[in-house]
Image (cartoon, rainbow, N blue to C red; front, side, top):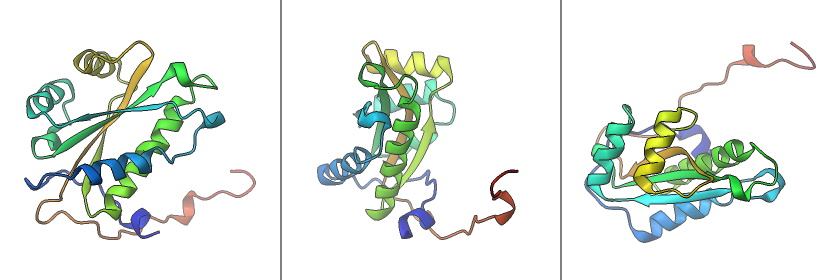
Length: 168
């Protein structure tokens, strides 16, 4: 529960690189997500090239955390692997959330940068990354070691007024 309660969107990172083991652990966590019909329709593009980061920032106006991130993990849905049409969004969102939670567990910082359903972002990022037909980018996780002042402190967001039993 600690990872759930302390996860925050961190947007500034140190220059310390991520290890291959840390990247693999993030991706392993993502792939443990549930999926409709156990289709596991996710694909991941790991980007570390700073020139590519600049192009992504041109595509996505809120992708500036890539200025200091060590890696961008692009979470994509492969519609050719879907068992139930349209559920790739939920499946890949669960994978992305697992990735974010594992980042907390590894004392890393991360932020979810939304791509889908903004079609221009989807098209431009697909072109940039040369994604094959049927593979749709859902979001990007900018990840790295958190900069000074960036931390994962608990903020209680529980709101009983949003809970409804049996009906509204």
